[in-house]
Length: 77
Image (cartoon, rainbow, N blue to C red; front, side, top):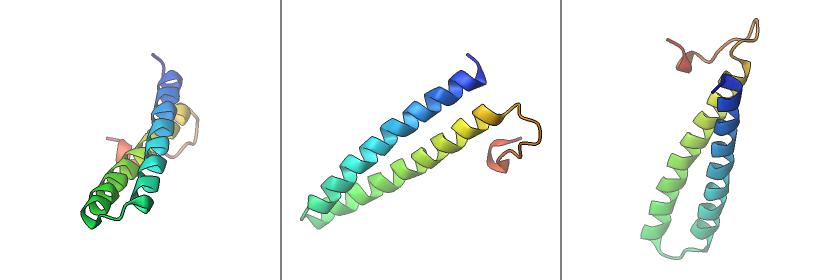
């Protein structure tokens, strides 16, 4: 698998995460139970972090071999 193919996988994963976050946000808005809203909010925050990282990794994989591309220091050794 090439880095470009891997970036496509990360993009698909990010799309699925985004859809799930939207579903959970609708559930959060409709919920009247404070405990459930708290749990949904925590889940949304966790998935949002995963979404951001999936998008960052997709960009990193897409542009890895481009000259002059400044890589995110978070993902370099």
